[in-house]
Image (cartoon, rainbow, N blue to C red; front, side, top):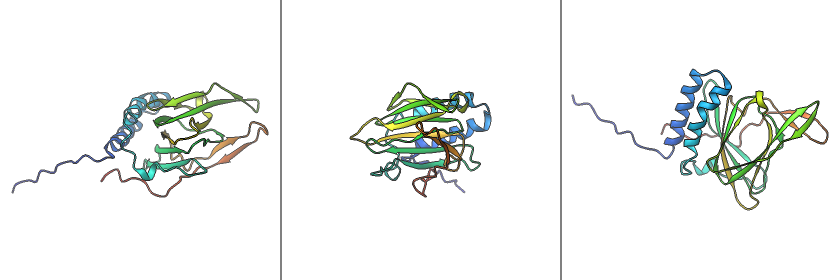
Length: 199
């Protein structure tokens, strides 16, 4: 009996699927956060080199709020991949993550302003502008408090974030610089669907 040759067809999502496979392998073999983020950075850089793989359903802005779309969550919740879609002028509150992370700029630009907490006071750092192709690491041990905003008032920007947990379920904090109040929050996601990476 002749065996059938099955041709593996390329999908528009192949870059994301390849990225997820690579992250899974690295997370299985690396436990130290700084080394892990270092190994993941070139893979995220390759993913965001091209802006032709993100499905439209996960690139949709909201007129009032930035959107956080889940692209993949590891079954053991060791990492998650999320597209953040920023409408014109939209921004986050000042917040932390409590887990390692990477931000990769796919489309447009955003401004990330770091903060550090000293004796209950938030000290503002120098804002960093991320443009398409840039990657920024986030590590709790070196300070992961920041505020992120779309750098544009007239166009949508999109970034791809990778976190060391199911970020939609992680208890994190938002900070008020004036009142010095720190509140817990869980972000959730902006949609209940994810792309089919295995089509």
